[in-house]
Image (cartoon, rainbow, N blue to C red):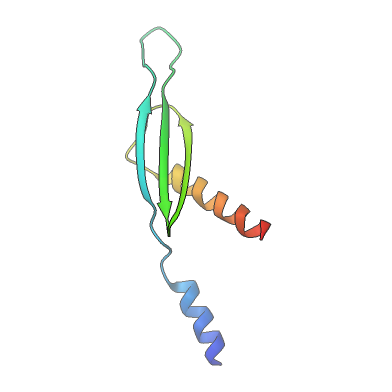
Length: 80
């Protein structure tokens, strides 16, 4: 196996940078009315800042936000 193949395999196996995510729920949850809550989030990954919002209150499970960051990163790589 060449040195280049070993380096590529190591890079693929290395863990990706974990985003630092901050969330804040805005809006009101009132019984008998349409829920107007939204989750505003900001994530910093390797010096790059992403922000957005999702419907509903913020939860401790950040998989939806992490998936959105990955989608945006993939789209940015495709543009390059």
